[in-house]
Image (cartoon, rainbow, N blue to C red; front, side, top):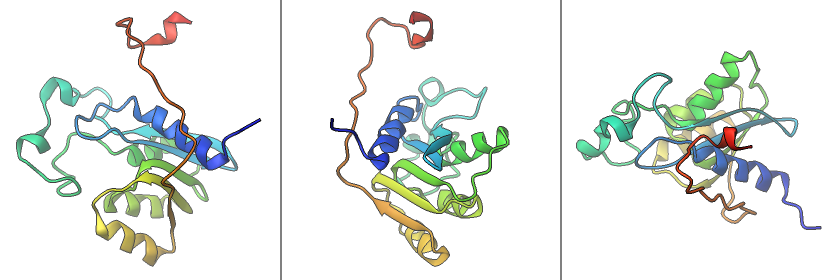
Length: 168
């Protein structure tokens, strides 16, 4: 029997989580794991109750802001931020957790992950933010890129219903 490794398993889940993203530029998913158990997930998108980019447009696109710059010019939260927020909202400690993420965290998220007590980051796709790597190194945060892993393919249903929970 060919089973995925734990890293492959959690990275595949991060990609599934990213499918909920409402960002028009990049779909990012994050999974916080402690003792091989998922404690929180997050994807990039607008805060609860706010309109999504497909409804109001993307300010970063309108202003031609390059990827990896001027994060404050976005109405959305990053996947890593949402994962930390979800853990805090539900009273779950992130100290000693591992972050599995579809993309390398930016410098802002890296600083938040350090203060949240995350001990390791495992990601697949790069992100153009040189400062993030320097901050992580200085803090002693282990950051590992996995370029090839056992990825589960996620296919979208075409029945027109985005909430498949009622179809089960």
